[in-house]
Length: 380
Ligand SMILES: C=C1C[C@]23C[C@H]1CC[C@H]2[C@]1(C)CCC[C@@](C)(C(=O)O)[C@H]1[C@@H]3C(=O)O
Ligand SMILES: O=C(O)CCC(=O)C(=O)O
Ligand SMILES: [Fe+2]
Image (cartoon, rainbow, N blue to C red; front, side):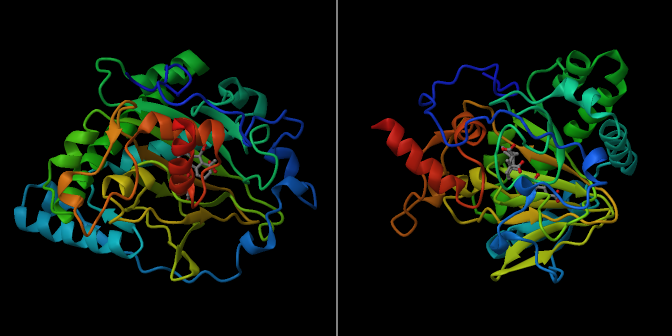
């Protein structure tokens, strides 16, 4: 079974309930080319005082891990890299990787095609409009999905399947949804997602080594991944102190590999304070998500983060969300469960958690706990 933008798959998970997250009728349209000239921002984009961005966000010193030795097969370098990964994941869950093997040209092309796409007129972008309950497509903010605390961003999300060879799911997505004129878009993002999948599997080796379960356990689990690629576009905002580009959350997915442009805006919540992670064009920002927190039986924490916007220039980020095949059961390896480390979370399939976030619950910093409770309720 594969998850193709969630809607085209039969889930054997619990039937959806009427949920608080029901799709709202879109009365408000987020068209940044219009909104940017208004002196105020619509009230739906104003976040509560306790969540508004703070003026100061000191820079977080994030470990910078050089992957060149590991990727060239040096076992000593591999163990050193896994040690650094483990240290970061026990501290705040974020680390940077450099000499990662992804071509600078490919990263530049991925950013360039983002500019081309998001600079299109709204009606053109809406040809790829995300449908209610689906995890793919174009969304101008989430008007119609949420009715308050709307993020100041546009997104384009699509699925990458590592096991549907010879199909190139990303290339086909762009051709099928946006047409022949987007063939090159599809080729670039197909190549980008393949590079992200390869890098993710290498990092899964390091995570397995750091947790003492060996390099192949998690690598094998994610070999046939069905991942999500998300292009985040944050238009400049005349009132950046009132809103957020992406609200505070932990990624429900397994591993996030993020490339932010030169503008900066990613913030992580560490030691009870928001800290910024400065852009580094040679580096990817990596963090574990909720699903990997469950796979590690809670040893590695999915970390709280958000994105702020600014009044001067748009900001972009490319986020690859590694996800297992939809029907894979998320359960920690035996070596991570014992009398001192009892099970933290129930078994679940990634598809059920994905559906939960798309149809029942807006992912935040409590998603996995809310999901565990929901599973219990649904099983009664
Ligand atoms: C599985 C996913 C849901 C979101 C995209 C991926 C991983 C991150 C999630 C998200 C970014 C967390 C914050 C809220 C959210 C609604 C958003 O701002 O985009 C989340 C994504 C989503 O549900 O579309
Ligand atoms: O844009 C960013 O820097 C962060 C985006 C993010 O956290 C997400 O899309 O999950
Ligand atoms: Fe995130």
